[in-house]
Amino acid sequence: MSDQQSDLVILGGGSGGYACALRAAELGLSVTLIEQAELGGTCLHRGCIPTKALLHSAEVADTARESAAFGVNTTLDGIDMPAVLKYKDGVVARLYKGLQGLVKARKVNFVSGTGTLIDANTVRVGEANYRGANVVLATGSYARSLPGLEIGGRIMTSDQALGYDSVPKSAIVLGGGVIGVEFASIWRSFGVDVTIVEALPRLVAAEDAASSKVLERTFRKRGIAFHTGTKFANAIQDDSGVTVTLEDGTTLTAELLLVAVGRGPQTDGLGFAEAGVTMDRGFVLTDDRLNTNVPGVRAVGDIVPGLQLAHRGFAQGIFVAEDIAGLSPRTIDESGIPRVTYCEPEVASVGLNEDVAKERFGDQVVSYEYNLGGNGKSQILMTNGFVKLVALKEGPVIGIHMVGARVGELIGEAQLIVNWQAEADDVASLIHAHPTQNEALGEAHLALAGKPLHAHA
Image: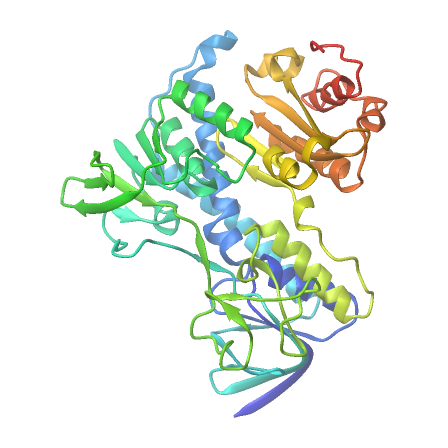
């Protein structure tokens, strides 16, 4: 059994793990980074990046199909899924190569293999022990299923759907959260008859209720069917398709069933509990500085309860590296983390939704919705939606919620507004370039400040 010593040992090379490794190395620490699959983790290889590549192909398909509305005559001859997958894989490969180069350039000791936590300072891979004064757990997540629902054949998770090399005629999507609505959007753009099943009362239920309402209305117009407030009972597949039965007795039949019921923490069998780390349903519990109960052991990313977002893990990885290096960074405010669902239309938000804000602040909460119908660039793009502000009376904006094509690109300014606790007047005085969708943020704040221009008071 060989031993190797580093200042920092990181178990998991996804967004949280590699960000921690790069920042720690930048700060002069010696780093060992252990990953059982590919550097970059789920986000790069089976999540954010490949999914958004497919969504862009879907956007191109919609543009071709609807081009006559813009005075351009084109025809959509079909979707070449092998070519779509080649494009998607090319994007992933280029980013993967670049990330490998960064890790090598920073002199991070990258170890390929399955690691097991042995104690507070040791991770074992095969016959080698990797020891560090600090250990960071960053093993990510996996696609969940439901009890009794076996993945295989025509029943798949996003992992299999990302490599599916043909366009199904029809699909049922079990789950109306981020992953479910994104795949529903992709497939509908590719010409698939799609039905979403969601047990909660509305789609993207974690978002503001107004955002869900606009998304549901637009999905209906796009021909995406959905059953909300109805639980799944069972599924049976055969050579021709899958039949899904809901608890209310409704039966649905389609060529494929996508199981998109969320992601679970990838922690089983990795020695965490055996090493004394406090767990809850597979998640690793930490304090606000991402310390576990075991001194010297930290955790970041999807295994820590909270938002399962790549950029959250990325920020946590940087935070932990800086904290270990003695820089004492500020703790991360979870409510200030931006969120984007990249379906068509996009849904973006940061801060508190109106219901949560009212629970916390009562009648001190005010809100305003600016319809994108008053925004020139949105009219050029032929998109509908809104920018909704949630604020405190005579106080800061505490939540921003947006629906519409490309509104995910507006989340940068939105998160600055919320995280820097700007008031409506602060933003209203800023100049937003014309014509941009970014103006919608300015117009919304003008209206909330009591001086609406392209909107009614």
